[in-house]
Length: 368
Image (cartoon, rainbow, N blue to C red; front, side):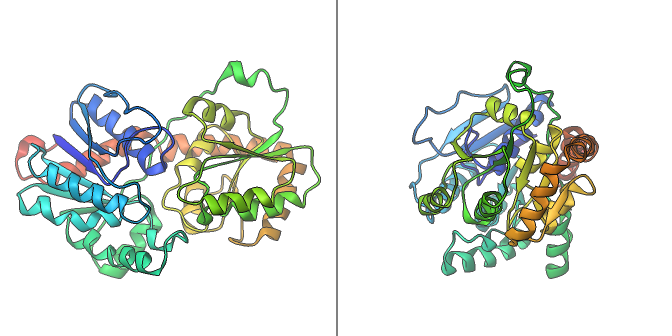
């Protein structure tokens, strides 16, 4: 099949979990013989990545570097380009881009929308943008031929609200062995890790407030950078003590080493879809501490612990428990790694995606 992906910023390192997931999916579909086109934005600070793999084509479409209009303009122009590209399926990602999913359908193309989260809940948006994203739930369900969600909680939400079937296909992850050269330099794990975009809904301020109250030799490492949230990042720095380190953007290999050598991983988010950073931490055998939102609890099962979302005092209590109980941390991390290998392995996820793609065609040549 020939598949076009829209709604992503690209596959350059430093983007969010959505882009990481799309890159991983594209590489695996390409290895199975599918032809992939990924519509990308031109990076501002780095060169455009080279073509990553046989059967994958990167198309760079211009847009404004704007918090509110960048995605809208880029997706619209990419959609117009896709009308004249020989694609069997045009696959949109996220609520906002779903608005344009009717256009390829009018031109006889099969269309799919993947919803990665309820973006209207994110604090970075003002009321008009949140209202727009809320209304985009309707095109996400009614405009494409099929709708995919990345968590069971999202599936329950949409099917309950719209009384229409959606398909659950989670993000996948590899189980990594780690960087032995990096790890042998560390006698014992000395830090708690957070990794992700530095945006309010990630709840990093709760983590900092909790960690500041704990008397420990361990450090808190915060890996990630601003996403139109420089004021928030300045606030985080202003409330941080000396034991808290901001690492900024971390390249993929170094990030894997940070996961592998962390004492524990904390994700205090208020809003998530299917958090890739959480999957990555668990795949490295890290004990994870997450807010008790359904999307996080769904991922960890009984292989991690949670705190009441927004309650930094409860977060502080749980952090103290983890620091005081290294054997529990170690055993929980091992169970987390096993859970990821069983529940979020790539092979069944890609097979499930191919089944959804094939179901769009009556022609038997697409059927598995």
